[in-house]
Length: 119
Image 1: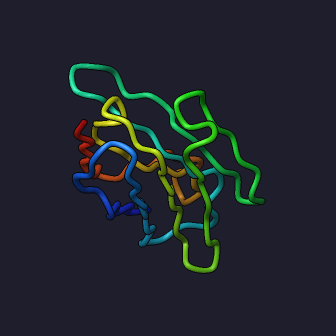
Image 2: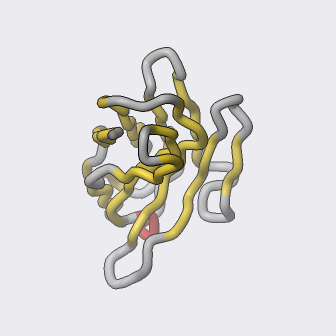
């Protein structure tokens, strides 16, 4: 089983930056795509960006031009650099990862980290 732990959340003013990190630990045969989701207050969880094991990235409109996703396969980490933050970026940010283990392909989630952007 894979455990995912996010870090790097916090409170910033609009226009500021934060870097979120997510570390995977536990047991697996392989880790595939990893991604970042967020859940604004009172809204559904939404995809922010994801990245394949080969480094191909995909960004949704909320992230394009402001956020950068990256991963370090040797350290089993995925990061999200967030610049130009806006109040509407406020929410709980979750990382996830598709991985292969004894039970077959599985999607794991972290516990989330809070990001608060004030105007």
